[in-house]
Image 1 (cartoon, rainbow, N blue to C red):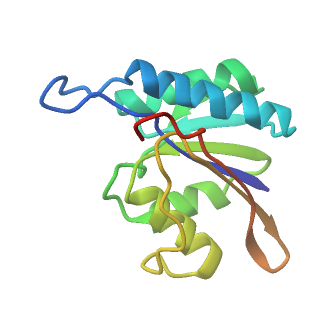
Image 2 (cartoon, rainbow, N blue to C red):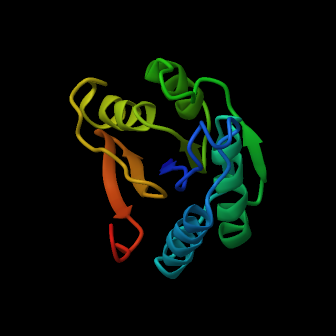
Length: 155
């Protein structure tokens, strides 16, 4: 099994937009990362997201580039403060190539749980639109790749 953990792109501040849609910069970051994933030969069968608008928009942008054969859908247990063990169980019950679009701190905790068996180890903090590729082998999950947007002026 292959897994792609993707943090949503930059979103509008909650005070400005309670739904927190992606900013133009956020859309650009996601598109840039998606294009790089395609150039690296990364493919997915299915993309799931938390259901929050910024994650759904990110998943839809990824789908435009990665063309998942089984489409895009929502998965419970991906909220920012959800217990990562719930997502782990859902992920490991699947087969194939899956992309999960979510939020911090959840994605970082999920990555730590999968790779080192402890959600609190903090092995990675994903910036906006970053994608962490993992592969499940006989000895457990291993990091395959990390793709981040190029830094912008003023960042």
